[in-house]
Structure formats: structure tokens, C-alpha cells
Length: 420
Image (tube, rainbow, N blue to C red; front, side, top):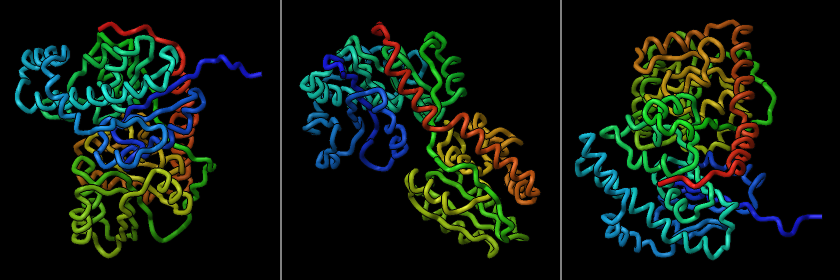
């Protein structure tokens, strides 16, 4: 007989825009496991565009009056964290108008979301002792989570961090606002890579006990099935936003030097440079290289495409990364990978085991050579690389394994309130 007095566990997920837009569609996989441990799940898109307010989704917490956000501007000077951060910026020689604007944007947006949504949470009569606030990014949503931590003293507040929200060197002046404030006020910080943990421990050793590892993952119910038939065309695939740091032009440069074999290259993803890259490919690639720019595909759509289309090699030439979900997706289908050794990529691409690693700053000829490394490989050796790719994904980046553990961890082990 069910215990009717059992307290409900509630989870509030703070995102940039999810469940709206296309920027966080990979959360569709993770959210499948929330109900394993939580009775009620709510989403708070902290950086939501104004038009989303007209299309509210179930269990989504949105402020009712976007115009009130601008009133938070007048409250910024009275925030203790604002003055502490200004003092830090001055000490580090980073105090200038742009960094102050960035700091103010964090505080204004974060405070606005908290102030408006907090009233809705109170009306829901959620138990404070069984409430978890989970920020998916260590940016504005994480700051918003610190404000909920002040209000709900017995709740648990955590954040994930990936790449762009973690590595300060990826930002102007090597600065992301309110780092120490977030670390001091949240209970746990979950990195998706060991590289991320090392980075934080070196930079903020006083908070090392809060840094934990929780890898992302993908779902693939198919068994290993990369047979690599004796087809005439070697097939390459890549998947990323078409922006500067992804360096898609470098793939084109490498392929443009291959003229003695037939190749087909497929790229998933769009971005502000898509038209420019398409024109560059048309200009540079010879007739023996066929190419397809697929545009935006959701993670689910990419996985469905892999089920019916075989590829021989996945390429990632990013200048910086966390651990790419796109590599997890490819490896789950036994596709070996060539990728740049940046961020946590070396934690999924093991050189000469399931793929090959390039230096961050590489010559085009080096990428060209690694393409030929797989292109000329005998079938037995290739099959071993492919099988290693699949087995490594299955052991370390399987969504069911990783997310079930993560959800179990954040729903248990109640933390004491963080000291301000």
C-alpha cells in the first residue's frame, strides 16, 4: 500500500531557454530520467526570449511581466555581490565598462527571474526539504540558483558546467562574472570532464570539495554494427555549429588536397557562417569530393540518420570544447573519430585506440594524413577501431548509465546550507 504521507521530491531545472528553442535540445535525453527520482519537475528558462512568454508550456515557470526586468537595474547598486565583484575586478585589473556591464546583466537577469518565479513556487507549496534547484549552465542560471538557495535554506542547489560556461579564457578579459559567489553559495558543481575539474581545482582550490564529475551521454539501443562495406566512396561526417571556433573551413582545406579517391562529406549543423562555408566548399573542393550541408538537425534526428547511413570517419576540428555530444553520438554507432586535443576531448578520443588526436594548432597536412590513416587502413584494423569506439561509448558515455547515477546523486545526500 502506498504511503499517502510521503513527501514529494521536486526538481527545478534552470536553463538558458529549454524547453523553448533549439539551443539545448540535448536536454531532451537527460530529462527522460528526472522522473526516476522526482515527483514534480519544473523548468525555468532564465534567458528566455520575450516571444516565448506567449507560448507557455506545462511545468514551465515564466515571469508574467517581462517589462519589470528593467526595474532590477535600480536594485543592482544595493546587491552585496555586486560590490564584492567590483572590488575583485579592480584588484585583478579588469575593471572597465564592458566587464561592469556583463556583471550587471548577470545580476539583473538572475534577480528578475528569482523575484518573479519565487512567488509562483510559494503558491505551489513545494516542500523545502525535498527541493533541488539544478542549473544546467554555470552562468546566469547558476547565479539565479544562488538566490533560491538564500530563500530556501534547506534545499539543494547544484550546477553543471560544460565548456563555454566553464573556461574563463574563452571570454574577453578571461572573465566570467560571479565565479566565487556561485562556488560559495551552491552545494555542488558538476563538471562533464576531468579536464574541467582540473581547471577548477587549479584556479579555485578552496572549493575543490564541491567539484564533481558527471559525464553526459547519448542513447543508442542498437548493437555494434559498423561493417564498413567495400564501397567505392569513403564517407566522412561532422556535426557542429558553423561558427568560428569550430573551424569547419579546415576540414574543407584538408579535403581539397585529396584528389585520388572518391570521398563524401556530410555536415550537420548551422550557424552564422553557413553560407560562407558553403561558398568556400564550392570554390575549393574538387569533383571527387561530394559534400552535403544538412543544416540544423536535432540530436534525435542525427541519431536516426546514423541508423540508416553508414559513415567511416567522424571529424571535429574545434578550437575549444568541453566533451562534444556529437562525438558520443558518432561513437555509439562505431564510427572512429579524428579530433583536436582540446578541453576534455582526449577523455573520449583515445589516440590509436578509437580514433586519432590532432594538436589544437595543426597543419592542414596533418589532418589530411589522418584522413588517409583511416582511408588506407585494412578492414580488420578498421573494425577494431570501430569496435573500440562503440565499446568505449557504451562504458563511459551511455546516457542510461550516466544520467541515472547523476539523478540519484542529486536527489540524495542532503547538503547543509552554504555559508554566504
